[in-house]
Image 1 (cartoon, rainbow, N blue to C red):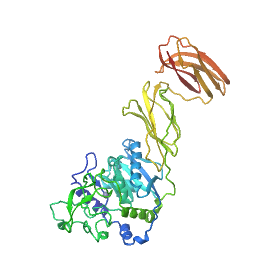
Image 2: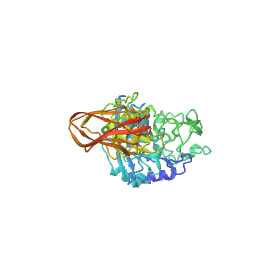
Image 3: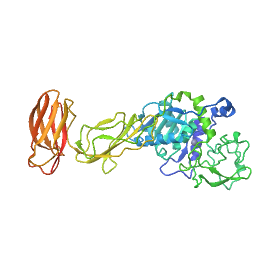
Image 4: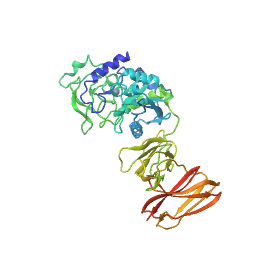
Length: 489
Ligand SMILES: [Zn+2]
């Protein structure tokens, strides 16, 4: 039965004229069946008293990609979408908190997800109890999103930082109908008398002044009459440009501020108080298993410090461990490493749970930049750190020697013939070690065999005939290497 209802919904939806480019043709694919829990709630509101304290709702977010691991919603877009949805639910005092790590799911059929057969298969194959089950995929059965079978499914193209479809679908998930309930699939035409729609509209039509508002349309009295079931633009006052006529002959415009209307995203900014009461009651009485007993911890991103590399450092292109200072409140970081100036190429673009990450195969002799965006499982509205730029030199493989401490190379600004001192202490002796002097391309210019002793070591190195520029001076042993940058004048 649900299949049939949904199918009919899509057929009608394909006539939409306000669908935006690059978005699925239809907006919301949620079934227009009455929600039985809402029926009972509206009849028995006195049984559903809730405090207005913060509700932390667990969410399991599945990011669907292709079989080969491509096509995922980008990490930055995930954070922006979760930030937006928590902002949209702030007035309701409901906040979403990840119940588990992001669930990456490589499956092209589910990702493309052209119809509700694929959608049902996706949802039923990936159930979760105790959290809102949300999916973000490339397709969403031809819609921007839908709420169905105890899950919310979002199309990537409708889940941008300024989009409110996620809030809309979560509103459905928590029992809310459209503000234009009953008009789904019917194109209101100002030239057609409203009373001629009475037999086609599936709920009693609400008038703009209506003493029986609690039994008409969406049955909320603080969401006024709205007959517009297609995506519509609003004017500067966030009301519809289309004037409608109710059954009493009164003229009105639709309120575009409601997430549960079909007004465009730049109009919508709220749930009504009655809608909020219904959602909170739905969570507390019908879905209490999703409530998490955890606080929302704010992330203080006011003073983020990138530690290594430092600005303008020259560092190895392999085995480079990027590190930053822990940000108060953060449990995870989005790390991004790009060319500088920015060229779209990203050498790292991933979530990291530590305050460091080791990266290999960076390009050689290039200017690169890195930055972080901190967050935690319930707080996503953070900003990026500043970028730190650095350059790379070639090493085939490197890791810092744990056995060495306090490697000091000085001066690091030298002229031809200067003595460069190399001091360090070692936990043990190393045979077959050497001092190496290299170009940034990794070409070895000088090598000097040394024997490292246990304890304090001191070596001297005199560069000869080197052109001005940046070079790499270091110690290579069978157990690992350490390098420092030297600038020849
Ligand atoms: Zn909807």
